[in-house]
Amino acid sequence: MDLTLNTTENMNYMLKEIENKLQTVNAGALNAEKFEPSTYEDIRDIYEWVQKQRSVSVREMEAIVSELGQLRKS
Image (cartoon, rainbow, N blue to C red; front, side):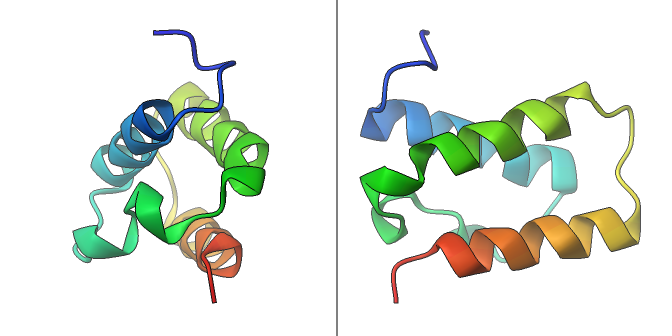
């Protein structure tokens, strides 16, 4: 999978991996259809950061969820 390509499939994959890593409860919030294609690079940055972490603190999780909330379509 080439995550440098801005595709819905890639965005779905990254959001699912972020969801798994953060063990989020509200899975519906991280659906690629709720994000504009223009947010792809921001989501990829978050995905890459999350994947590098062994664990994520509660504060970091809150910040990530907040950032993703701001990136969602209004």
